[in-house]
Amino acid sequence: MPMPGSLIGSVVRPADVFELGIDPRDIAFDVDSVFAQTMTLFVKLVNDRFGPGHLKYEDITSYYLADCLNLDAEVILELITLLIDKPIEVNLACYPGAPEVINQISRQTDILFVTARTTAEPIRDWIQHVLPEVDPAKIEVIATANHELKPGILLDHGKKYFVDDRLETCALLEQHGITPIIFDQPWNRADVRFLRVGNWPEIASLLDLTPGPKPLGSTLPKK
Image (cartoon, rainbow, N blue to C red; front, side, top):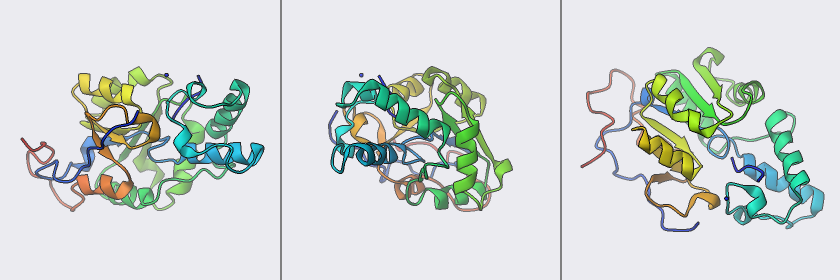
């Protein structure tokens, strides 16, 4: 999720990247702007306050909002704090298709979300709220408060793939041997090195969601 506070190129899509689908046990997910439509709601809150059309989603061209938006820093901080602390109360929505894909994954394995939020409880409660068909015991949410801690946590959990929206995090993951999958957003289009998805059906297309044991090498990229 873009933060208060430093892109455009061709897009690499996921078709035919893998010989076989990614084992769902090997993948984890960021929350904001990957599973949750956090910045869509941010734009709505801004326009509710200042009038329709004051802010467009495409105006968010930097992860650091103060670098790209003509808004007072106090307003940005207030609205981001609201989104962080009260996601259920402000009716935060998840991306279309996300609950269905997470449901399918949960039939095979537990789900891991790793977020740079400072606290896990509000967003964990929200995730359970929007995923009523998934056993809460199968969902783990880890809040790192620091993007640089994500690779270590993912490696500790045996993850090989991570879906994120922040370019710097994707570069860091790659340095640690984790394959980043970037969720396409206006603020992350400057770098086209990484596998890019634009929606949850595209994420699903990368996964082996068939039940039963997975063959060896099921997550190897094509040569």
